[in-house]
Image (cartoon, rainbow, N blue to C red; front, top):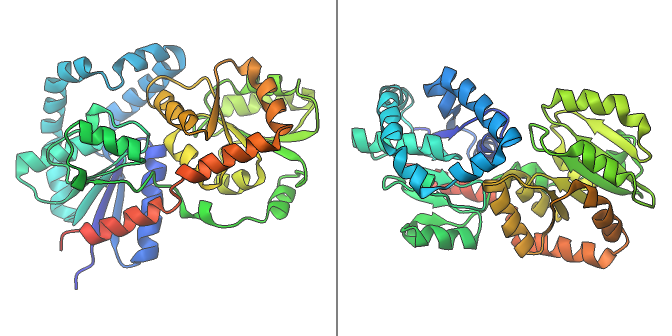
Length: 374
């Protein structure tokens, strides 16, 4: 029997989209070690120069003019206006996709971002390709850029998103509510005492984990300044991701802070850090929040960006799994109240556990293997 071949596609190396496909890849290998997997950056594969330009432009927009991103995100009028441009780009990319499909011969394709999913969807229509295509949503919002007739299945992160996809005309039998995929190691137990000692932390102290996603975005320095006003003994883990400027800035100032801080750059052991923490202060990316929910870790979300972050925040706060703070200066009051109120912490943990989908990666991997054409 021939080995199954699965093509996974994402965009941007340091992103939740990439983390999602890596998690699915690991899960597939656990279930079927001989499956051949190709996990590629769809944007870089088709337009490597454009990827760099668009990536820098995106980072500039969300840092300096987030309201512009809010206007562009899931805007039907924008979608209508750019349709011709999008169709032209997809036609230009079709020959590359034709070579990719001819050489790799995937039995199924799964995309964790709408851009490569749209390219594959249009490729299928142009070349009358019957290879199953699966759209894997990694945020709690089903924006219109995901909607294509040639997508065979949608993987939804929640019942609410499933309902909204159905409202957009997607048949319910094409939607699988598996959750957002994350590394299965987040479901494995961690010895908190050993992990804390590894980072020179006290296991019996209250611990805050402060993150700004893979790129280290957000008002992290303002958050730390606010936290220094909180009474009581607790410690902090700060992860700056790929933001080297922030890392070096904090390293110079770290002795000025009253609280003990374990400062890390890009970390590959977030599962361990979440196991140490009692509360996470973070950007509400889909992957990070799914990992935190699996760990039943209370979340504080500070000043989320418009678009997917704002939508994720609405979902999490409505479910009682997170607290939103618009002003970083107010973090001190929220944290002080939380650390002095075990009942509220317990409610946040229970709410997170109630909506967590810890088996998402394995469920998606199993579904892809079962659905792969043979």
